Length: 466
Image 1 (cartoon, one colour):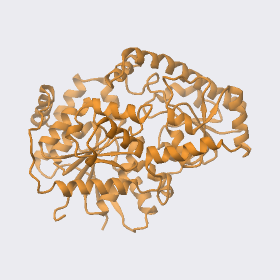
Image 2 (cartoon, helix red, strand yellow):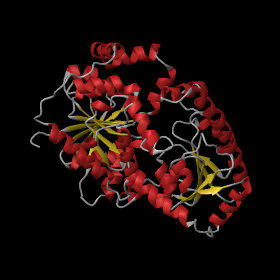
Image 3 (cartoon, one colour):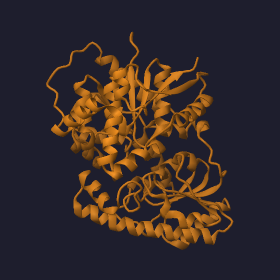
Image 4 (cartoon, rainbow, N blue to C red):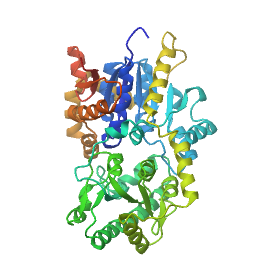
């Protein structure tokens, strides 16, 4: 391509998504692409100001429909790499959810994680076949060489028992409580009765997990335990565990790096069980208080099911003594199948596959005239865009903080990422890479006075070190 293409990568949750997107950004940068990492909550300012060739979104949902329409009308190509790539209980449910969210007709390229999702998207007509690609997800590249060597190592060492929790609906970090979470579930397309039942069952599961964690810590005083709450959970609710001498509660870092250092993973309905199988760490699922409404099928099926408290204690003892028996062949085969179906492959090459389709999409679109009438954003969306343009970033942010939602402000602060954070990830990736190239990162502050007024200053651009 004669001109340097520019791609914006939207970062939803840095704890979960940043490292994979930095790896993808570096792969694109090695091919001559200008790459900008954009915080999800700042994209409404930064993407229109930067005018990239393509923006890679974290999802298509009703809450970003106006942004998608605005980008498309500005001539920006729309790509999606859904960060909830195995969301829902199965691939059909996920395909239906994405289709019902709208705006998929405006997407130029959609990357799903695995072949099962691709088949379901085609079956339900979610997006056209020619823009749909099963690529895997770059954050799982860190489960294979050479990128596993780039994983950060937890400061507490290794061989701990890890408990991963997944209760943001009843232990929310950002929202005002379960009532808000019910509305979130309803807005995602589920019935209110279903949402209320999920909250009731999740509260019982959360309390049961907390009690079981206490029992494990007291039963095994010489074993180190680490509990890692979901990134959207309130960590303070686990303070009683953190006070125990052999227990730590940690929320920093990625789930993959914590699993990588663990002897064993204990969970209920947490998709990190699949990550554990990728890293050859045995996942145990607490099934005696699981329910059909809560069950995440893939996470349960890759795990060794545990039917009671006493069974869990016995299995932890066997694991610490390195005499845990092999899983049933049915479970072993399902683990192999689930990786093929839901993740394409754990080969360290998902970032390459995503980069390939991004560049192919840009190359195909260049020189082509846009045809057809594009939908306008809603009246509210147009008003928001106008206010951002007229007021600029600082004034708009001051008004938002003064009159906006405290919950959104908490979410916004929880999803920021700094130059040194991205620089540290790049440094580890550079060290593990065989290409010998080195990259750095800088803030995007705007090249003109007008742009400097509009951009957030939070987006970061990758550059190759001289």
